[in-house]
Length: 339
Ligand code: SAM
Figure (cartoon, rainbow, N blue to C red):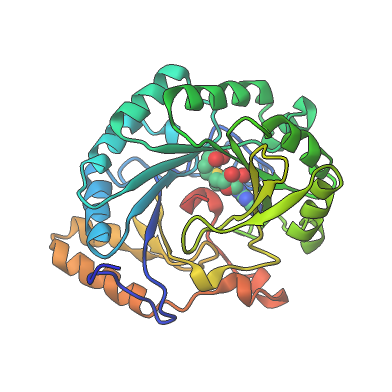
């Protein structure tokens, strides 16, 4: 660990930075940006309120100076941001930053785009895909976007070398839990890593209910009816997915159990919203306005001091202390701070 790494009040280092580059999305996934809320009248962030690429790069450099080694670009849908490749290129020039990844729904990831992103310095891509069944998937994204097109985007990411490609599937009871086996069968032996995500109570608009969440335990039981799986060690400290290897050597799957097996104790993630608010937890209620500092003439050192102070008192462990009371909090939307 380098000397400049900052620790929070629970001794957790700041290692990862998730940056939302836009709050807009091409999908209206019912569990994330339900149409009833994010409809025609919804007011998205204005152009001026979004951080510019220069501002994002400056902040990232400051965060790297405080111990961050990995950046994940997300949203909303990150590829919606115009000249997104340019941002990747600017970030790739930051010394000490080891890894730049992206989470995308794939709707705009042509082969040309994937190659341009790779050339700009993107290392890896995670694509979200909740089902291979067209009816299920299209009703979940709620804009009728075909699963077949996301499969093309996955192939594009692979062809461009944005590997290992990870595929994230949010499992919602009665909606797509019957697709767990199909998804696993499809991605086994492809080299891609399928990860099942417990449906989480992020934000306030998705009407989350505990009974809609399919637990890691249940997901594993379903998989084990079909294949023998053995636990694998985490790749690094703080890895969010629990890894399981197919005993027959056909690859691995991951399970992100942020509801039933909270991993707050190893959470090294800071999150920036597209308008420059720093959140120290995915389930945060209040952000810290860094854009103001970027725009009021503060020096890098002053901004670094502000971040140090915020991280230094960080005590968030929402998932570990989730309760009936906390579920109703006015938490920030996933579309604002990304996954
Ligand atoms: N638009 C991009 C995408 O779809 O990958 C990036 C942003 S999206 C908010 C990031 C991830 O969060 C997606 O995989 C999405 O399925 C997941 N997500 C959104 N709401 C969720 C929830 N309530 N519980 C679990 N995962 C969720």
